[in-house]
Image 1 (spheres, one colour):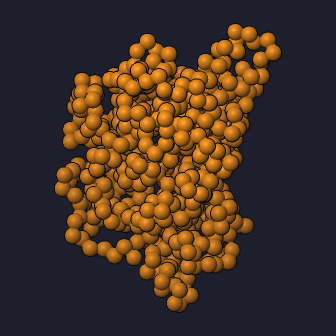
Image 2 (image 1 turned 180 degrees about the vertical axis):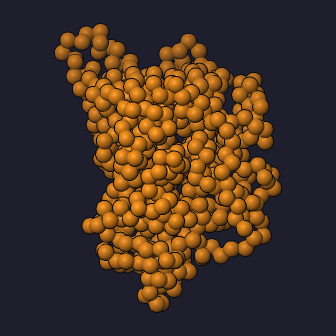
Image 3 (image 1 turned 90 degrees about the vertical axis):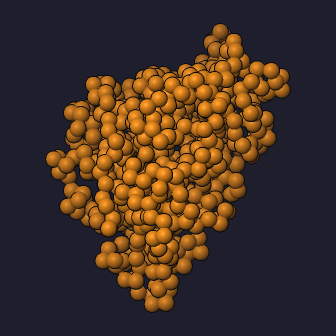
Length: 578
C-alpha cells in the first residue's frame, strides 16, 4: 500500500494539469487538457485525495471542523466557532468546489479525475469488446477496474448527498472531454431520492463487473491492492449501508434490498471479517500522511479534543478501547510522570460548544488518540465489517429482515469486530507503549498493565482481548435487550466508527442516538440544535443561481428548515450539561 501511495508522486505534475482548472468551460476549448492520462493513475490519486479530504483536514476541514465535530466524536478546545455551528464559509466553499465543480488545489485530484478515469476505462474496454477473441483476460481486468471506480464514485457521491441533500449528480461532470456534445457548466441539483435510486443501480453493476475474474490494477488500488473479490464485498456492503440509511423514509425498499443482499451471499458477497475492512493506509512520509497527523504535527495545531459525549460513553460502558480512542489529559500525564501512580491518569472530554467566556483548561482535556492524531502512517476508515454487522442487527431487529440473522448475534459480532480491529491497529502501530502521551510517548508501560483512571480500569493486552470484549458486553448499558435494540445498535455503531465523521453525522441524524450534548454557546444559531445539513456553497449563488435556489427552497438559516430526504425528523435527543 505504501508503494501505491508513493507512486502518486510521479503523477502529481501531470494530474495538476488535469485538475487545476477554474471551471468546465476551459475543457471545451483547451486543446492542452490531457485526456490520455493513464486511468489507473487517475484512480489512485482521486482515491487518495478524496478520502483524505472527506476524512480529515486536507484543505476543506470536512471532518474535524464539521461532520465529526457536529456529531460529537470530537470537540474544539481552541478557535471553537465551528463547535457553535458558526462555520467558515470559505471552508464549505472549498469543499464544494473540491468535490463538485471539478476544481482542485496543490495537484490533488477532484471528483472529475475519477470521472475521467471511468471514461478512459470504459473507452478501452469497449474497444477490446469489438475484437474479444484473445482479449478475455484484459476485458475482465478492465471490467474489474470499472467496478472498483464505480464503488468509489458511489461512496464519494454518497458523502456529498448525505451532508447536503440535493446535489448535482446526473449532469455533474458532463464535459466535451468525456464525450458529451457540450460541457454543462450549471448542472441541475438532483433530488436525493433519485440519487439514491441510482446508487443502488451503480453498485449492482459494480458487483456484476467485479464478478468476472478480473483484477483491479494493483498499483492503482489504494484500498485492496488489486483484490477484486474484496471490492465486490465493499460494493454490496456499501449498498447495505445505503439501504439502512433510507430505512426510516422508505422501509419497503430498504427491506427488499437488504433481504436480497443478505439472502444470497453467493451473488452478493459482503464483509465477513475485519480482513475485509476498507481503509486507506498512509505511507507516513510527506505529503502522504494521515490528515490528523498533518494538522497536529505539521501544522502545529492543538485545537481538538475527544468530546465529552464520546469519553463519557466509553466510561459509562467501561470500554477498554478508551486508550486507543483518546489520550489522558496532559495534566494527569504530568502528574503521573512525577508519581508513577496509574491512579493519577484521567480521561476528560470537552463539552462541545461551551459558551463564550466560560473558562476551562485545555490541559485538563483528553486529545484524540495517538493511533490517529500522532501516527503519520495511520489509516482512514471507509467502511468496516463491524459496521456491516450493526447494519445486519438493525435490519433484523427493526426491519424484520430474517436473512440478516439473529439481531443479538449480529450486534455482539459488531462489538467484537470493532474491538478486534482497534486492538489490532493499536498493536500494529505500537500504541501500547505510547498511548498515554503524544508523539514523544511520555508514558511507557508493559503489556498486561492494569490502570485505574477515574475509577475506570484500562487493561493493555492483546493476549486477553476476549476478556475486554466480555467485560463490555456484560455492562448494563451494553448487554443486549430487544426492547432497546435500536438504541443499543446505534450507540455501539457510533463508538465503532469513531473518527469517521461523515458516517457518524449521518447516523446521529438518522437514528436520534446517541444522546448528544446540547450546544450552549454561540449566538448565530443559538438554540437551534444539531444542523440538519451542511450549508450550500456561497459561490453557487452566483455561478449556478437558478439551480441552487430550487435546491435551497425551504432551507432556513442555511442549515435548518427541511431535513435531507432520508432523515425523518430533526435531532432532539439532548442531554443538558449543567
